[in-house]
View 1 (tube, rainbow, N blue to C red):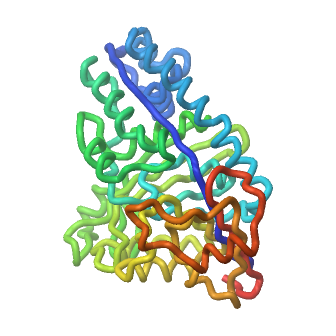
View 2: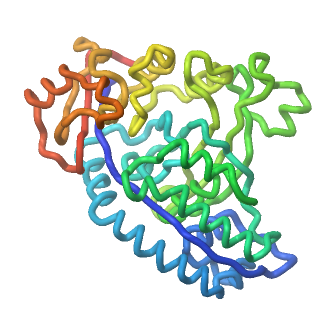
Length: 364
Protein backbone atom coordinates (compact mmCIF):
# COMPACT_ATOMS: atom_id res chain seq x y z
CA UNK A 1 0.00 0.00 0.00
CA UNK A 2 1.31 3.44 -0.87
CA UNK A 3 2.40 5.81 1.86
CA UNK A 4 2.25 9.59 1.82
CA UNK A 5 3.40 12.71 3.74
CA UNK A 6 2.01 16.23 2.99
CA UNK A 7 1.67 19.98 3.99
CA UNK A 8 -0.89 22.45 5.16
CA UNK A 9 -2.30 25.86 6.14
CA UNK A 10 -5.57 27.69 7.02
CA UNK A 11 -8.10 28.92 9.72
CA UNK A 12 -11.65 29.73 11.13
CA UNK A 13 -13.70 31.75 13.81
CA UNK A 14 -16.52 33.17 16.13
CA UNK A 15 -18.38 35.81 18.51
CA UNK A 16 -21.59 36.32 20.71
CA UNK A 17 -25.29 36.97 21.98
CA UNK A 18 -28.53 35.72 23.73
CA UNK A 19 -32.33 35.46 24.73
CA UNK A 20 -34.68 32.57 25.85
CA UNK A 21 -36.06 29.52 24.00
CA UNK A 22 -39.44 27.82 23.87
CA UNK A 23 -40.00 25.40 26.71
CA UNK A 24 -41.07 21.81 26.27
CA UNK A 25 -39.11 21.18 23.05
CA UNK A 26 -35.57 19.92 22.75
CA UNK A 27 -33.21 21.46 20.22
CA UNK A 28 -31.41 19.01 17.95
CA UNK A 29 -27.62 18.79 18.04
CA UNK A 30 -27.52 20.16 14.51
CA UNK A 31 -29.64 23.20 15.42
CA UNK A 32 -27.43 23.85 18.45
CA UNK A 33 -24.37 23.72 16.21
CA UNK A 34 -25.92 26.10 13.69
CA UNK A 35 -26.91 28.56 16.41
CA UNK A 36 -23.40 28.62 17.88
CA UNK A 37 -21.97 29.02 14.36
CA UNK A 38 -24.15 32.03 13.59
CA UNK A 39 -26.41 30.12 11.19
CA UNK A 40 -30.22 29.97 11.48
CA UNK A 41 -31.56 26.75 13.02
CA UNK A 42 -34.15 24.70 11.17
CA UNK A 43 -37.71 26.08 10.87
CA UNK A 44 -39.69 25.47 14.04
CA UNK A 45 -36.59 24.92 16.18
CA UNK A 46 -36.95 26.02 19.82
CA UNK A 47 -33.72 27.96 19.29
CA UNK A 48 -35.38 30.15 16.66
CA UNK A 49 -36.46 32.70 19.28
CA UNK A 50 -32.85 33.22 20.35
CA UNK A 51 -31.90 34.36 16.85
CA UNK A 52 -34.13 37.45 17.23
CA UNK A 53 -31.52 38.96 19.50
CA UNK A 54 -29.57 41.88 18.08
CA UNK A 55 -26.43 40.42 19.60
CA UNK A 56 -26.91 37.04 17.90
CA UNK A 57 -27.56 38.77 14.57
CA UNK A 58 -24.32 40.69 14.94
CA UNK A 59 -22.63 37.41 15.78
CA UNK A 60 -24.07 35.81 12.63
CA UNK A 61 -22.91 38.67 10.38
CA UNK A 62 -19.43 38.52 11.89
CA UNK A 63 -19.17 34.78 11.33
CA UNK A 64 -20.46 35.06 7.78
CA UNK A 65 -17.69 37.52 7.01
CA UNK A 66 -14.95 35.63 8.85
CA UNK A 67 -15.69 32.24 7.34
CA UNK A 68 -16.12 33.69 3.84
CA UNK A 69 -12.73 35.33 4.16
CA UNK A 70 -11.19 32.10 5.45
CA UNK A 71 -12.72 30.01 2.71
CA UNK A 72 -11.53 32.27 -0.09
CA UNK A 73 -8.81 31.47 -0.93
CA UNK A 74 -7.30 29.51 1.97
CA UNK A 75 -9.65 26.57 2.48
CA UNK A 76 -10.70 26.57 -1.15
CA UNK A 77 -7.05 26.06 -2.14
CA UNK A 78 -6.74 23.21 0.35
CA UNK A 79 -9.76 21.46 -1.14
CA UNK A 80 -8.26 21.82 -4.62
CA UNK A 81 -4.94 20.48 -3.32
CA UNK A 82 -6.75 17.51 -1.83
CA UNK A 83 -8.52 16.69 -5.09
CA UNK A 84 -5.29 16.80 -7.09
CA UNK A 85 -2.74 15.27 -4.74
CA UNK A 86 -4.43 13.03 -2.16
CA UNK A 87 -5.45 9.65 -3.53
CA UNK A 88 -6.36 7.89 -0.27
CA UNK A 89 -10.03 8.73 0.07
CA UNK A 90 -11.70 5.96 2.05
CA UNK A 91 -9.51 5.34 5.10
CA UNK A 92 -9.89 6.60 8.65
CA UNK A 93 -8.06 9.84 9.44
CA UNK A 94 -5.82 10.12 12.51
CA UNK A 95 -5.17 13.75 13.46
CA UNK A 96 -2.94 13.82 16.54
CA UNK A 97 -2.38 17.11 18.41
CA UNK A 98 -5.37 18.52 16.56
CA UNK A 99 -7.49 19.85 19.38
CA UNK A 100 -10.95 20.54 17.92
CA UNK A 101 -9.65 21.40 14.43
CA UNK A 102 -12.26 19.61 12.33
CA UNK A 103 -12.16 22.43 9.79
CA UNK A 104 -8.79 21.40 8.35
CA UNK A 105 -9.47 17.69 8.75
CA UNK A 106 -12.53 17.82 6.50
CA UNK A 107 -10.91 20.24 4.05
CA UNK A 108 -7.98 17.90 3.42
CA UNK A 109 -9.87 14.61 3.79
CA UNK A 110 -13.56 15.23 3.01
CA UNK A 111 -14.34 11.56 2.29
CA UNK A 112 -12.84 9.92 5.38
CA UNK A 113 -15.44 7.56 6.88
CA UNK A 114 -13.99 8.13 10.36
CA UNK A 115 -12.10 11.08 11.86
CA UNK A 116 -10.09 10.64 15.07
CA UNK A 117 -8.99 13.94 16.61
CA UNK A 118 -7.09 14.24 19.88
CA UNK A 119 -5.54 16.79 22.19
CA UNK A 120 -5.12 17.79 25.81
CA UNK A 121 -8.12 20.11 25.66
CA UNK A 122 -11.17 18.87 27.63
CA UNK A 123 -14.12 17.44 25.74
CA UNK A 124 -16.82 19.27 27.71
CA UNK A 125 -20.52 18.49 27.81
CA UNK A 126 -23.13 18.40 25.06
CA UNK A 127 -24.29 22.05 24.82
CA UNK A 128 -27.80 22.72 26.20
CA UNK A 129 -28.71 26.28 25.26
CA UNK A 130 -32.35 26.08 26.26
CA UNK A 131 -31.66 25.99 29.96
CA UNK A 132 -29.29 28.97 29.89
CA UNK A 133 -29.92 32.63 30.63
CA UNK A 134 -29.27 35.23 27.91
CA UNK A 135 -26.08 36.59 29.50
CA UNK A 136 -24.67 33.05 29.74
CA UNK A 137 -25.33 32.42 26.04
CA UNK A 138 -23.69 35.73 25.19
CA UNK A 139 -20.66 34.78 27.29
CA UNK A 140 -20.46 31.43 25.51
CA UNK A 141 -20.40 33.05 22.07
CA UNK A 142 -17.74 35.54 23.12
CA UNK A 143 -15.65 32.74 24.59
CA UNK A 144 -15.87 30.86 21.29
CA UNK A 145 -14.55 33.90 19.49
CA UNK A 146 -11.54 34.15 21.79
CA UNK A 147 -10.88 30.40 21.58
CA UNK A 148 -10.78 30.43 17.78
CA UNK A 149 -9.07 33.74 17.11
CA UNK A 150 -5.59 32.24 16.67
CA UNK A 151 -6.77 29.57 14.22
CA UNK A 152 -8.54 32.17 12.11
CA UNK A 153 -5.57 34.53 12.20
CA UNK A 154 -2.59 32.16 12.10
CA UNK A 155 -3.95 28.79 10.89
CA UNK A 156 -3.22 27.09 14.21
CA UNK A 157 -4.49 27.04 17.76
CA UNK A 158 -2.39 28.71 20.45
CA UNK A 159 -2.67 25.81 22.85
CA UNK A 160 -2.24 27.52 26.21
CA UNK A 161 -4.65 30.35 25.38
CA UNK A 162 -7.21 27.99 23.89
CA UNK A 163 -7.01 25.60 26.84
CA UNK A 164 -7.67 28.50 29.18
CA UNK A 165 -10.70 29.67 27.17
CA UNK A 166 -12.09 26.15 26.74
CA UNK A 167 -12.14 25.62 30.49
CA UNK A 168 -14.32 28.67 31.13
CA UNK A 169 -18.04 29.32 31.11
CA UNK A 170 -21.24 27.31 31.36
CA UNK A 171 -20.49 25.70 27.98
CA UNK A 172 -16.86 24.64 27.85
CA UNK A 173 -14.47 22.24 26.18
CA UNK A 174 -13.90 21.32 22.55
CA UNK A 175 -17.49 20.36 21.76
CA UNK A 176 -18.83 23.87 21.02
CA UNK A 177 -15.83 24.49 18.73
CA UNK A 178 -16.39 21.18 16.93
CA UNK A 179 -20.06 22.07 16.57
CA UNK A 180 -19.21 25.43 14.98
CA UNK A 181 -16.74 23.94 12.52
CA UNK A 182 -19.15 21.17 11.53
CA UNK A 183 -22.03 23.58 10.97
CA UNK A 184 -19.83 25.96 8.97
CA UNK A 185 -18.64 22.96 6.90
CA UNK A 186 -22.28 22.24 5.96
CA UNK A 187 -22.50 19.10 8.09
CA UNK A 188 -25.69 17.90 9.75
CA UNK A 189 -25.07 16.43 13.20
CA UNK A 190 -27.16 13.30 13.60
CA UNK A 191 -26.06 12.30 17.08
CA UNK A 192 -23.47 13.27 19.69
CA UNK A 193 -22.58 10.88 22.53
CA UNK A 194 -20.07 11.23 25.39
CA UNK A 195 -17.75 8.20 25.44
CA UNK A 196 -14.76 6.83 27.33
CA UNK A 197 -11.95 4.43 26.44
CA UNK A 198 -10.56 1.85 28.84
CA UNK A 199 -6.97 0.55 28.88
CA UNK A 200 -7.75 -1.89 26.07
CA UNK A 201 -9.23 0.70 23.75
CA UNK A 202 -12.83 -0.42 24.31
CA UNK A 203 -15.46 2.27 23.79
CA UNK A 204 -18.18 2.77 26.37
CA UNK A 205 -20.34 5.46 27.90
CA UNK A 206 -19.25 7.16 31.14
CA UNK A 207 -22.10 5.43 33.01
CA UNK A 208 -21.29 2.00 31.60
CA UNK A 209 -17.58 2.28 32.34
CA UNK A 210 -18.25 3.42 35.90
CA UNK A 211 -20.62 0.52 36.47
CA UNK A 212 -18.19 -2.04 35.06
CA UNK A 213 -15.12 -0.51 36.71
CA UNK A 214 -13.42 -0.15 33.33
CA UNK A 215 -11.02 2.64 34.28
CA UNK A 216 -7.35 3.06 33.61
CA UNK A 217 -5.29 1.37 36.31
CA UNK A 218 -2.45 3.81 35.65
CA UNK A 219 -4.37 7.06 35.75
CA UNK A 220 -7.47 6.14 37.74
CA UNK A 221 -9.75 7.42 34.99
CA UNK A 222 -10.82 6.57 31.46
CA UNK A 223 -9.87 8.52 28.35
CA UNK A 224 -12.82 10.86 27.87
CA UNK A 225 -14.16 11.76 24.47
CA UNK A 226 -17.15 12.26 22.24
CA UNK A 227 -18.54 10.39 19.23
CA UNK A 228 -20.42 12.45 16.65
CA UNK A 229 -22.34 10.96 13.75
CA UNK A 230 -22.92 13.42 10.91
CA UNK A 231 -23.88 13.67 7.25
CA UNK A 232 -23.70 16.07 4.33
CA UNK A 233 -25.01 16.27 0.76
CA UNK A 234 -22.57 13.61 -0.43
CA UNK A 235 -22.11 11.29 2.57
CA UNK A 236 -25.04 9.55 4.27
CA UNK A 237 -23.03 9.13 7.47
CA UNK A 238 -19.52 9.78 8.74
CA UNK A 239 -18.11 9.54 12.26
CA UNK A 240 -16.00 11.96 14.27
CA UNK A 241 -14.23 10.96 17.48
CA UNK A 242 -12.50 13.47 19.71
CA UNK A 243 -10.43 12.23 22.68
CA UNK A 244 -8.87 14.31 25.44
CA UNK A 245 -5.64 12.41 26.05
CA UNK A 246 -1.89 12.68 26.57
CA UNK A 247 0.00 10.82 23.81
CA UNK A 248 3.51 11.31 25.21
CA UNK A 249 5.46 8.20 26.26
CA UNK A 250 4.57 9.00 29.88
CA UNK A 251 0.90 9.61 29.12
CA UNK A 252 -1.01 7.25 31.42
CA UNK A 253 -3.97 7.13 29.07
CA UNK A 254 -2.01 6.67 25.85
CA UNK A 255 -2.13 2.88 25.55
CA UNK A 256 -5.92 2.60 25.39
CA UNK A 257 -6.09 5.39 22.82
CA UNK A 258 -3.51 3.82 20.51
CA UNK A 259 -5.22 0.44 20.82
CA UNK A 260 -8.44 2.08 19.71
CA UNK A 261 -6.65 3.64 16.71
CA UNK A 262 -5.03 0.31 15.87
CA UNK A 263 -8.45 -1.32 15.51
CA UNK A 264 -9.33 1.09 12.72
CA UNK A 265 -6.84 -0.66 10.45
CA UNK A 266 -4.86 1.19 7.79
CA UNK A 267 -5.35 4.92 8.19
CA UNK A 268 -4.16 8.24 6.83
CA UNK A 269 -2.60 10.78 9.17
CA UNK A 270 -2.59 14.56 9.32
CA UNK A 271 0.03 16.40 11.40
CA UNK A 272 -0.20 20.17 11.42
CA UNK A 273 1.17 22.91 13.69
CA UNK A 274 2.26 20.24 16.19
CA UNK A 275 4.91 22.35 17.99
CA UNK A 276 7.58 19.87 16.82
CA UNK A 277 6.54 17.43 19.56
CA UNK A 278 7.24 14.45 17.32
CA UNK A 279 10.88 15.60 17.12
CA UNK A 280 11.23 14.78 20.83
CA UNK A 281 12.17 11.44 22.38
CA UNK A 282 9.23 11.53 24.78
CA UNK A 283 6.86 11.21 21.82
CA UNK A 284 8.79 8.37 20.17
CA UNK A 285 6.05 5.79 20.69
CA UNK A 286 3.28 7.74 18.98
CA UNK A 287 5.74 8.69 16.23
CA UNK A 288 6.52 5.03 15.62
CA UNK A 289 2.81 4.19 15.72
CA UNK A 290 2.01 6.73 13.00
CA UNK A 291 4.85 5.52 10.78
CA UNK A 292 3.76 1.92 11.20
CA UNK A 293 -0.01 2.38 10.81
CA UNK A 294 -0.34 5.15 8.23
CA UNK A 295 -0.72 4.50 4.53
CA UNK A 296 -0.38 8.24 3.97
CA UNK A 297 0.94 11.06 6.15
CA UNK A 298 0.18 14.66 5.29
CA UNK A 299 2.23 17.04 7.42
CA UNK A 300 4.09 20.30 7.71
CA UNK A 301 7.63 20.50 9.07
CA UNK A 302 6.38 20.42 12.68
CA UNK A 303 5.46 16.76 12.20
CA UNK A 304 7.72 13.71 12.02
CA UNK A 305 11.34 14.66 11.14
CA UNK A 306 12.14 13.73 7.57
CA UNK A 307 15.01 11.48 8.70
CA UNK A 308 12.54 8.96 10.14
CA UNK A 309 11.04 8.23 6.71
CA UNK A 310 13.11 5.36 5.35
CA UNK A 311 13.84 5.72 1.65
CA UNK A 312 13.01 2.02 1.17
CA UNK A 313 9.50 2.56 2.52
CA UNK A 314 8.50 6.14 1.75
CA UNK A 315 8.53 8.44 -1.24
CA UNK A 316 8.37 12.09 -0.20
CA UNK A 317 6.74 14.80 -2.29
CA UNK A 318 7.32 18.39 -1.13
CA UNK A 319 4.96 21.22 -1.99
CA UNK A 320 5.49 24.91 -1.34
CA UNK A 321 8.64 26.35 0.24
CA UNK A 322 10.67 25.40 3.30
CA UNK A 323 11.87 28.52 5.12
CA UNK A 324 12.58 26.84 8.45
CA UNK A 325 10.87 27.11 11.84
CA UNK A 326 9.94 30.34 13.60
CA UNK A 327 12.57 31.65 16.07
CA UNK A 328 10.94 29.85 19.01
CA UNK A 329 11.72 26.49 17.36
CA UNK A 330 14.88 27.43 15.47
CA UNK A 331 16.68 24.34 16.82
CA UNK A 332 14.21 22.19 14.86
CA UNK A 333 15.58 23.30 11.48
CA UNK A 334 16.07 20.29 9.18
CA UNK A 335 18.91 20.60 6.67
CA UNK A 336 17.83 17.35 5.01
CA UNK A 337 14.33 18.75 4.52
CA UNK A 338 15.76 21.90 2.95
CA UNK A 339 17.72 19.74 0.50
CA UNK A 340 14.59 17.75 -0.32
CA UNK A 341 12.71 20.94 -1.22
CA UNK A 342 15.60 22.21 -3.32
CA UNK A 343 15.83 18.93 -5.18
CA UNK A 344 12.16 18.07 -5.70
CA UNK A 345 9.93 21.10 -5.80
CA UNK A 346 6.28 21.03 -6.81
CA UNK A 347 4.16 24.08 -7.49
CA UNK A 348 2.56 25.35 -4.32
CA UNK A 349 -1.15 24.66 -4.46
CA UNK A 350 -1.61 25.86 -0.92
CA UNK A 351 0.07 28.68 0.93
CA UNK A 352 3.24 27.78 2.82
CA UNK A 353 4.94 24.43 3.10
CA UNK A 354 3.59 21.06 1.99
CA UNK A 355 5.27 17.67 2.10
CA UNK A 356 3.68 14.64 0.50
CA UNK A 357 5.47 11.33 0.95
CA UNK A 358 4.50 8.09 -0.80
CA UNK A 359 5.89 4.60 -1.30
CA UNK A 360 4.74 1.37 -2.86
CA UNK A 361 7.52 -0.65 -1.29
CA UNK A 362 5.68 -1.60 1.86
CA UNK A 363 2.24 -2.95 2.58
CA UNK A 364 0.31 -1.78 5.64
